View 1 (cartoon, helix red, strand yellow):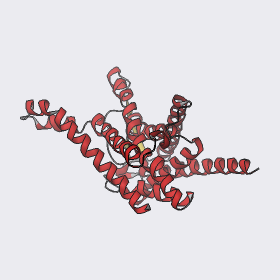
View 2: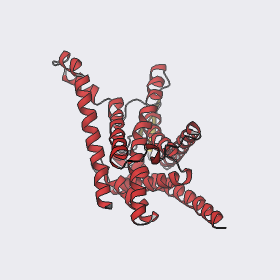
View 3: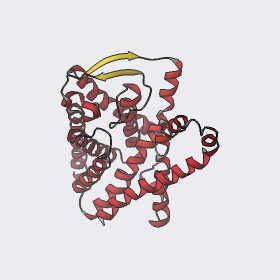
View 4: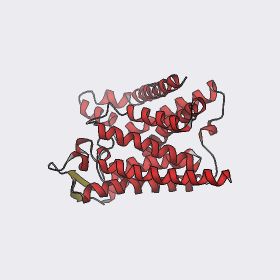
Length: 287
């Protein structure tokens, strides 16, 4: 059953992506026909950040359909509780920005990065701000799949530690095909899965961890201008470059900051803090 649940996560990703891609192809048909002589323009549209992140909405819809019509339970059972929604999102967003900024700042201070430029022009600022809801959709969808849906299923059939380990490991496996992937980058992604699982257990809702995940990606891609899990994300407020002479464990190499030891250390500190908080809560409830 656990293996089947892990397989279903991949089905949701593939099925939702196919549906989203099909609808996009239909809606963009007039544009494609008008630009048959300019395929670069067509590819640019399909590879745009908005499109790549927006596709995740269809993956979420595939999961919602499964939960509602096959599992016959309310979608709210995935953690969509209505109390303090905006506050939970903002808190999670702040945590995500803080933890990644710590990792990035450590990499910079240890000589892994060079500062290039800053761009606070109106056009660039507007683009960066406009990516926020798309990062929230993308990060939130990945949290729905691995933390809100898969983790409880595995937990029911084993225990919480195994559930966190399996859901986080699957999260790492799902990134194996990313550009410039390394053992250290996969370790960092698995640790981010553990960190986000603990954050969701601490807050007991999906909103906060969706904000955390979205902010983690937004901060690295469109604030500091480094690759998100090995993939470039377009314009950013700041621009940094990996120092060629820097060790990969400091800079993250071609995978960039998320593939550095600094990211793993930042996440381990976050895991330790949340683990301590959850242990304290458990002890209080026991008394």
